Amino acid sequence: MEKHTGKEWDSVPFYKQLKDKIAADIASGQLKQGDKLPSERDLADQYQISRMTARNAIAILEREGFVERRIGVGTFIARQRIEMDFVTFNSFTKTMLEKGLVPGTKKLHVRKDKAQAALATQLGIAEGEEIIVIRRLRMANAQPMCVEESLIPYRFCPGIEAYIADDVSLYRILEEQYGIVLIGADQFMQVVMPDEEERKLLKIKKELPCLLLEAIAYEQGGRAIEYSRSTTRSDRVKFYTRLNLEQ
Image (cartoon, rainbow, N blue to C red; front, side, top):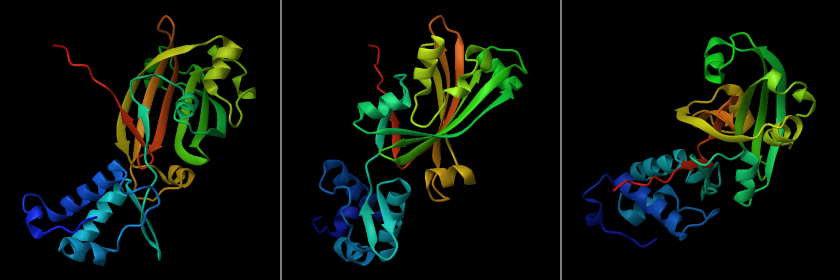
């Protein structure tokens, strides 16, 4: 990184200029995964700013997942986020394979329950109807990505608990064992703070927010089959979409 004069920092806050500069160097490939950043003292000297300003910039970069601090060692460029299309309906397994990553799934629990009113409305079933609840940890290259829970009316897939296992695709089970092919979903996203169990499963810090993705998946003909919610690491995944503007 080249040394800059104070004049280049006049229009916006110093910490934001430094943060944006480092983020741009990461995007361009000038800084790569695993590269070590200069110390806060060195950044302050290089850019003629205070150490507090440099510290604030690094803190924001860490919060946004660009860098990671290693106690006693320094600050390093983090792994790039995995881009996931928010519009195209794909299974997690298929998406990871398309990204050249090795998908993994760990079964956390499979249990029967009764549909509460809100879920019954979303799936178009009777309140109190029996459902199967499947909770799993999803991974990419052995790194935890999200905690996912799927709720499905049990009459659509009786006996499915016998097929749920580690590293087995739920959608493949539905297709091969029950003839159910999911073709689309209504999806909703919001930022949430994970609970203690989710933090431990995802191996993240307490202050790291996550992305909650909720979806209602449909088969051909529009019948709702599955309600799912996925608590996803915001430092490893980012969602995108492409919009076409009508002229």
